[in-house]
Length: 321
Image (cartoon, rainbow, N blue to C red; front, side, top):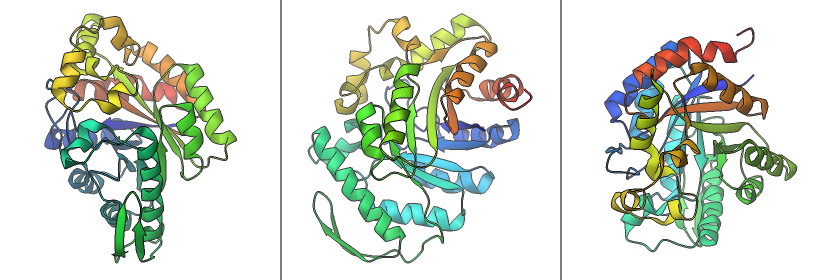
């Protein structure tokens, strides 16, 4: 049975309000949660970017839900530090934490002052990071000289069972590549044919573990309000790779999205005031075989969305609903 989670968007909501939202989401019937890990928002209109790893400790303590985070080790984060963070949360909250690992975006990584590598180099760097993180979580002392460097690192605090390391992908090729190393796959909502092809590529290449999907939604009591909310908050997020990977600042994203038409936003966000339509969309995703679907309401106010989906959407997606 598919579980339905709450996506906590650090780049849109301050950490205190986001903690209150995830607590409320659990009470409203959401099964799980996950969060982003950004240094910068996608737009000045979003206006936040709290530190995910500090927040995760509070969120895991304040709820009983499983949590995941999408992280990009290798430039902004040294893989040994990410291994320590994963290991600590795994030790404190056994069986409740997973981390998805991806190659990242320049908007978050350029802050180090290091050059932003080509995609193939970023993929090779991530692969090295995965091996380092796995070895550290297994209790090994790690030294490594490559695209990342590690000198005699060892984790002294580790969970009995290492948390899952999930592969983050938006393309079929990356999904297939993730099958080499990942304990699961996560992607974002896209046309059904594309999602089906990604799942097939991952499984056909031997990919194991659960399939996660993050779904962007915009809901409000009135259709015009839902459309305006999506346009205000998410029009800077409509650009496919490599554009979204390579732009560096919120000013860049706001400049290139200044004239985005509203229909373009509706191609990447499920926008509707009709809760029944949201049920239909989510049923279709679940039928593809996703084990966990995290709902990201792209508005900055979450309570109305949580209450409406908790009462009218989630019950209809469960057996007997």
